[in-house]
Length: 457
Image 1 (tube, rainbow, N blue to C red):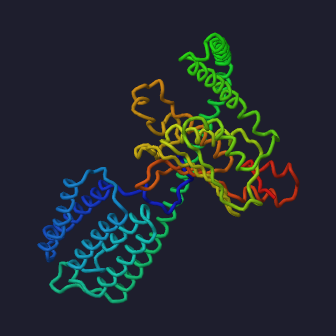
Image 2: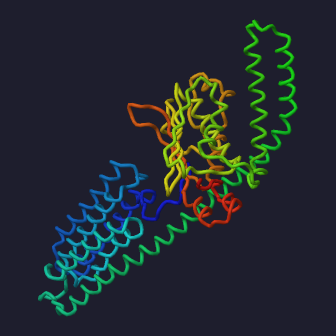
Image 3: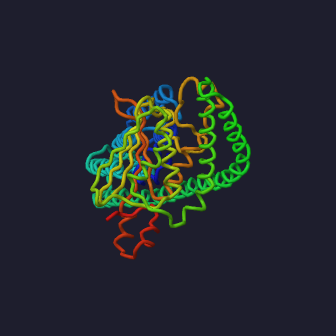
């Protein structure tokens, strides 16, 4: 299914690629190497070049290990990425300790890990890295080796200047971290909104196209279906009652009539939704949508849980009838012995749970069910081999879209082991109904609720 817009504090879909951090570290290694060699051999300033080069070489070896051990496309978990940024921060702090501490102008590079974290990670990890930077700059302000310089006596900058650099770095950590996070957060929110809009538009376009196809199909298939019904009636009259083909002909007639009924429902989805039709409690609605499947050889159990005097009551909405009916039909098709339908209502929500004891949803498609042309489950080995017996994956898409138009949210899952089977949960907010009942405007106000239901009295 396609769920609601993901919350902006969910950064799982925006993990840093390992290749990104590796290339950033290569840039750091190259810059640090050039700087150290330039100061030592070109400017000829005395410095502990051996330890400096060893610290730089360690970063290079870490990069080589990561490049060989893991694929470049790997997206790191947030904590792993934070640990790698923390290593870069500590390695740079070591180099600054060896080369003058906060007196070294390259101390400003301590801000880089915090900025990277603020644009890609959760605030708590960015705050942790920011705290580590503050600890590092505080330590470097007090303890460090002399700044490499071209004089015999080591240069010592005034403590006031060092304190000013400390204040500037701490302020920059806070400001840059907050600013980078806010800019990235706004970009994430805009991207989420655009993605959600594109999904809604695409699904509405699919459904609008299917509305027209349904009307065309009803028109084109009406005549051949009528012919099939007529022929089966003649065959029933011609065949003796004890004929071995009598039962098959009767089944063929009933199924052709059912096809005509289904086509009639499809053509009524857009024309009847806005009409004020008969009202029925949710328990009666479930009885109506399960009635066509009572003779399928599968036991259908209906359970209700909620106050009888507050049972949701709604108008006969073709979209709701078709959507729930399609889900029940799927459950019956895949069930081995039993389909259980549970209706639960409270003061805050109305929930329908449709559970079967079949094979359940396949793990590789459960996240994509509800998209056009994605089939839900393989019915059985015979149907997998017979492509003509399989569906196009449009039934669930249509049902899901029609139900979501009424304000519902659909959740898919499998039963927990050792049980087996699929579970479809449909949730409606109760306030979508109650606010119309409380308005006290009578029947018309209640029937205009988006859900098509109102609280019963």
